[in-house]
Amino acid sequence: MDKTCKFWDMKSGVNTITLAAHESVIADMAATENGQILATCGWDKLIYLWDITTGMYRSHGPKALDKIHEGCISCVDFSSDGKILVFHSSTTSICLITMITECLLTRKYSNVPGFEVTIKTPHSSVTDS
Image (cartoon, rainbow, N blue to C red; front, side, top):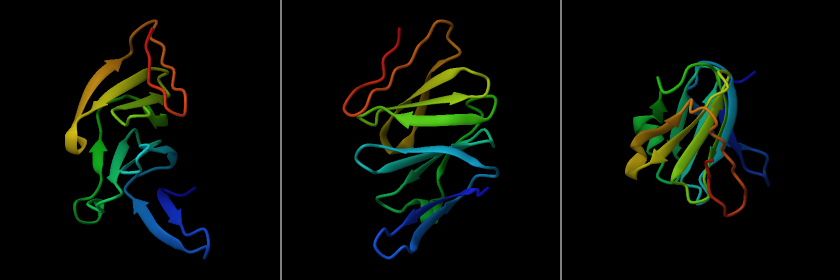
């Protein structure tokens, strides 16, 4: 299994971009609806945020979200407006992170009993109950 995320030109079949930062297998990835930020998560318990449109990751690397969760992170997704990142891990808890400007992050919920997250696409929001 690969530890990278690759972009391919569909016409030529050529790999155009390879993103490498994870120390273990990438389990999932998601992009904001506007295509500006890509989030990757994996067995290394990390989430990386890649600023795809500006290419800042080339000189500064991706923004690493570490120590935000215990266990391997199995899935990640953004709300339709790109303001909330939700992820789930092997510890079976769900976390929401509020996105602030320039990939600064604030933890919003974690391990809340009875907390339920629903993500509907397209054009819906994350809800709690």
